[in-house]
Length: 144
Image (cartoon, rainbow, N blue to C red):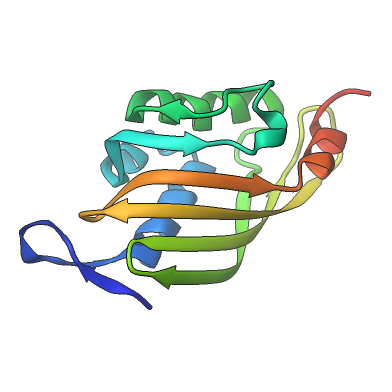
């Protein structure tokens, strides 16, 4: 597990920070999320859905809105969770491989594989690249 020096000489545990963020995101815990991401964070959604959302989302408030408002459109409240499969960390990068589970508002169940790459600085998330099985997501949450 990678532990690095953060701001003011404190030791940070980047994988733990990423896990805390993802848990907070699944619960739409905005206060915790805001305490973990940088004010100038950049979020890169999958390129295959850039036309649906954006090719990147910049700034803490915009990222928090993106991560909390979109789930409210698609999922039943309280149904989202991440089943973490692997965490790989090196220097300022953390890769989180997980199965995303949720109950779509249109019914059924969603389980899709995701792998997100996080870049951290001084104990904060500064950039994220999101990869997920978009075909499974589209089939589960969009009406046919």
